[in-house]
Image (cartoon, rainbow, N blue to C red; front, top):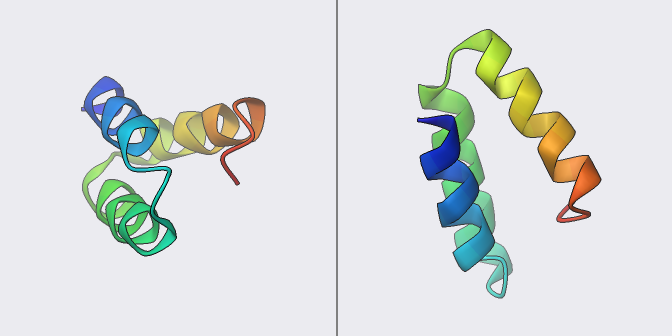
Length: 48
């Protein structure tokens, strides 16, 4: 699931509202360790 959300977030980064919506969905559906990994990925890729 983590890779799926990385792909989705990468594709919707142009639209801030859509990005936020997908980000909320990702954190709601991911396990705790996956959510932590997603946070690190977001910081590294400078999406946030």
